[in-house]
Image (cartoon, rainbow, N blue to C red; front, side, top):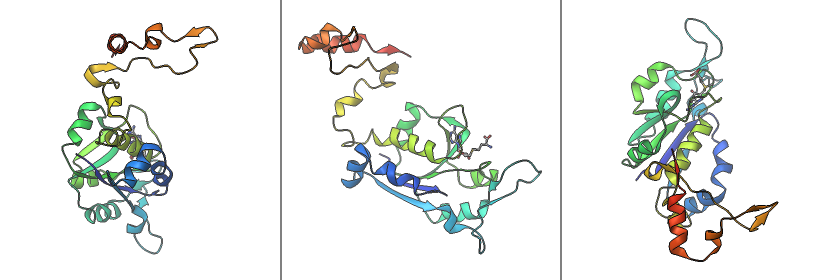
Length: 212
Ligand SMILES: C[S@@+](CC[C@H](N)C(=O)[O-])C[C@H]1O[C@@H](n2cnc3c(N)ncnc32)[C@H](O)[C@@H]1O
């Protein structure tokens, strides 16, 4: 399964806090996966460590230059190179499963107006979008992609049962969930969930998976 990641980004510090919380933190400490970052700036050109330049043909914003990106990717050999791009293949559970047929990946984050097209032609195995909207950089999409991948790794979730009725498993959304108190402002927890009858509860859960 895919458990060895290197994130290529201009902002590696973003990933520090993310990795420090919850299931990711304990999974990382238990070596259930490996995660490194490569700072694209380290591969910048000249005294100013330049990584971006104006687009050919004019237009707003800056484009990530091909050479720093090529050098950053070339020093990090992995099974696949995954670029985050708004116009990429839209992420879903089938794609998560397909990615888990590999062992290691570079996850490559764009910024500004995005990548020089030629870096994609040179190094891309996958171009992945997290949805039909644009965010400012590939870092949040990278976290989104990696969380979807990591929760499938054995040992990451406290209780592997969590994956059993999870949304998108068997083409359904998860069933509704409740916790204490039993009644809040007149809104009640379904009686069956308080019954202690595990067979009936399991049946209720199955019957309450929502259609996609
Ligand atoms: C501001 S965006 C570039 C937008 C680009 N000019 C366009 O209109 O498609 C900068 C970077 O954010 C990342 N990004 C933005 N939206 C994304 C999405 N929906 N899925 C994956 N990555 C995204 C990509 O890495 C992209 O190169």
